[in-house]
Image 1 (cartoon, one colour):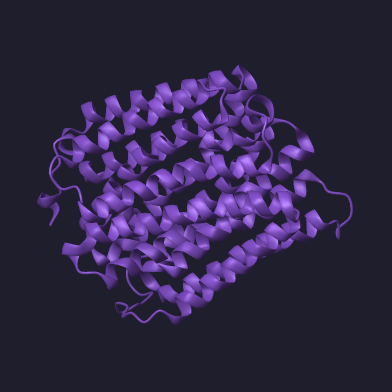
Image 2 (cartoon, rainbow, N blue to C red; image 1 turned 30 degrees about the vertical axis):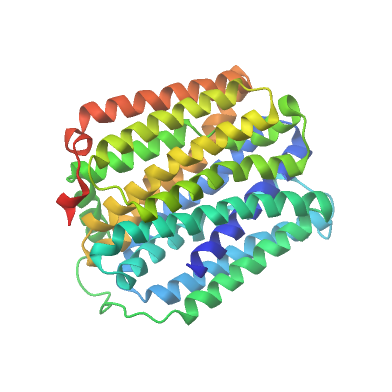
Length: 392
């Protein structure tokens, strides 16, 4: 959990800082979307191979290397922001983010593979809830800390703190004491092994439906990537307000994670998941239409509560459905569905904001999210009627 919270803190501090950095330089919401694209392309290219390596190499060592790589991006960005490299060029910022996209492909598979070595199967649902609390706590603290530090001390200090969190994460996973399965690179060729993981996911209607549902919700409901533009153009707040908006969804998810840790959902899990995604879409529409800072923050808080339900249920389904020897590959495919959709959603939101304007782009995204929930309910009846006790 220390590894998890520190990696997310590092990434989120960079996310809020680089968003402010780019918008300060360009004042163009479309350029915010390009931040996501700069991470998406390397992530998408590396993720399938990352899953294969997690299944065939020591997981803790891979996690350490990924954390060190995660620290290099904010170091480069700190040098850019401090003026050491001369006149700032936006292209340099995007180039630095390419490394983050690549190393992030390893962070989730390493965590999910080690998670399954720590807890017995009957505890997976509660463990997923606690993991969600830790994850979302970092999602709250990271943007809030980043926003405050940008306003008080400057962007380069915020980047430096992000690098420090990544190095602490490397130390935490180095100290982890947990057994790992026998690892060997012998066996199926790499592409055949990756294809085996893909076949497993696409042949499992429940797992595929859960991943697709979350992917479309994140892809089309990514209003938070436009928060710097909303802060400037509609809500009229500074970087501290940006930190609050970016933290609000995670704060709601933490609150929901606490509830679900005490009362893990088992019965009617599929219906609960679908209802949560519909609620998420409604909250995104409310955020898009709001002109009040605190009302906007409230809608984002509620969206985080709905997303918290989705995250816990998807994580539990993923852990219960996946054989141990395939956890790295399946987790990487999950990352392609969900992790990459964050960046692709940021690019989509920025592009739609350029075409339609800020408010219409966000409202349309919320409507599409609800449509995706309806289509998933129709096309994946086993997910709609899911009871988690069936997977034990």
